[in-house]
Length: 113
Image (cartoon, rainbow, N blue to C red):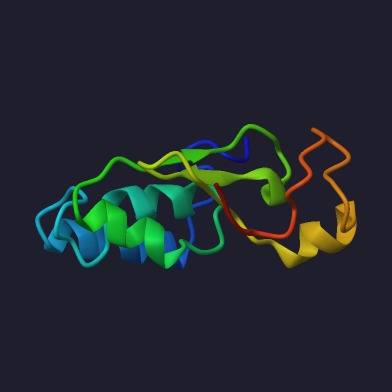
């Protein structure tokens, strides 16, 4: 099922897991944090820079996959802001106003405080 760890393993997530293991594992001070690789294995197509940087600092960032539609996925930052996943395919499919599946109005990506 989409959104579950290892549900969409691909070359990038495999590279991330290998790079992370070679660096000692975990998130803190890693060039490729393990949590980033796990997010990619759940179906994320990219990881926003602010997410990776926070994880490298050892901060807790949570990836939320509450809806099957990728335009509704987001990372919750330590300060409570949400960084939304940007998926142009879903954006065009579900429209520019809101996600028809769950009612999320922020389908344009970016950060929402």
